[in-house]
Image (cartoon, helix red, strand yellow):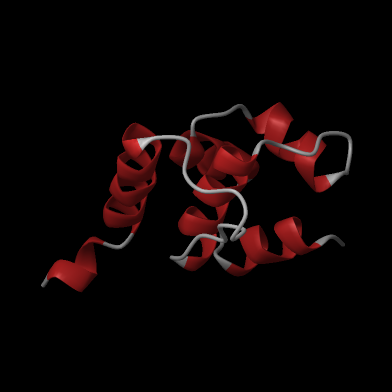
Length: 85
């Protein structure tokens, strides 16, 4: 079982639920889990945020723009609202 699937199952999410959180289809999540797709850095960051609450941003690949940074921050806040309490 690959890492993405293990992490998703650990969070007790279906492929459909994860796809909705990150803005892609169930079939695309399946393709990522089965190694048929690699996914963009932005999508992988969204998935990391949805599953772990942090994103992996390689040091040599900064956010493309402020909008991308804000989008990832909003996903984190949506998934981890309890931190604001």
